[in-house]
Length: 84
Image 1 (cartoon, rainbow, N blue to C red):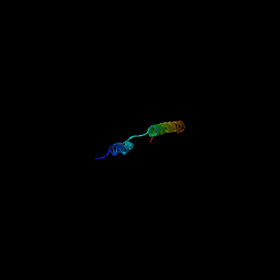
Image 2 (image 1 turned 180 degrees about the horizontal axis):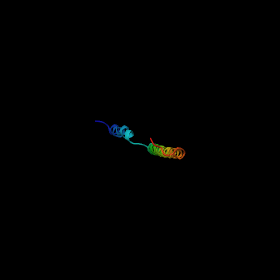
Image 3 (image 1 turned 180 degrees about the vertical axis):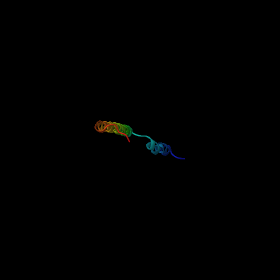
Image 4 (image 1 turned 60 degrees about the horizontal axis):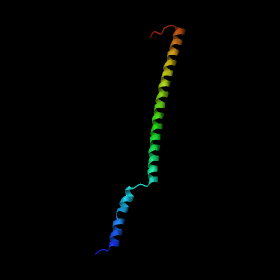
């Protein structure tokens, strides 16, 4: 028969590797939270940068259109209406 001490030690020792594989100490959880917040911040910055780029592009296109119209009006003022 197996003595009680060996049985008790084997019962205690068996779940430890399994528990250690799944249990995360509090500092690991904090690190995970920091990583998640870092990821969220990174995604938000990328989203804002893309939208900022699109807004700048739209503003530039509107400016170019305005410049073309001004040039056309100036040309028509000097040379008369344009007739192809």
